[in-house]
Image (cartoon, rainbow, N blue to C red; front, side, top):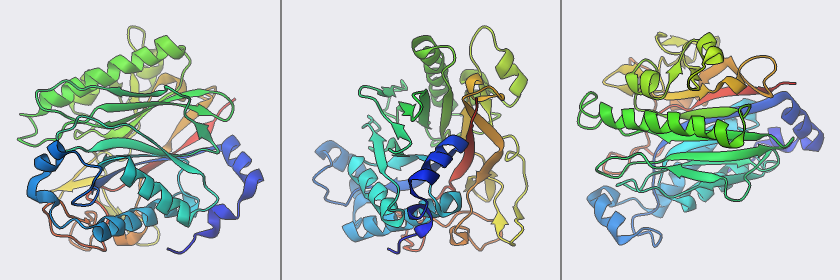
Length: 357
């Protein structure tokens, strides 16, 4: 892989400046980043559960997918890479380390580390974070998994209490809520439980770490911002004033308003701009979202979300399909046809978080 010089050339002084200015944060469902077919790191139970879907998933295909994903991540933030990236649909820490190593190979000035924990998901897919250890640390014992109760195993919520360079605790939740498999409405109750779980631990963070603790939530929610799992059960809203004025329970501000309801279009360079992070039967869905608590809102917030920067990542343009609708170019695998020039069935999303007073 070629090395991108953008971050390597920045140096220590620029890193300090970036830390003072704020952080580039991203999220991506990377579509079944699994270990190789006969991985010694996979349990027999999971091997049986995957069945024939894993057949033919060679180390070469796994590594090619990692290269494709890394090429997108390395171009984020103007070629400097993200400061914090949440991902889902990864099998284990081994593949996460491969991905982090690949991005480091493109951005050698970055000290990317992985925060990950195994879940009980029936397909063995997890949620994890890649973060720059020059900007954040993860204190011992500050990675938590919150179980989403359901009859069959599903992904748990991953909470990591990052410590910023100036000593602030930043509670970040990674989510991959139960899918719509079996029908959107038939499966809605599972996502409602996930929403209740998130709302409970959002409130718990403020009780344990202090009422002024900033909270960031990101993920693939398998629902849109207006669905009840988010608006009613997760206690999220697209109205900033409601979040700031909440009394009985803390609310989350859903930052995807400008994206939700948009039409497919093109940017100033003529590159297609998708109307959603995921396409199903040519309908754009905003399933991947950022939400923030009240302590990331307003000019006095020590970490302040900038909603105007929220965007669907469309670089490189090769990620975007050339059909009638700008759906992402899938990599495939796991029983689906493989396109080694593909990436994922979801687009990444990104935003900027500023440092306040």
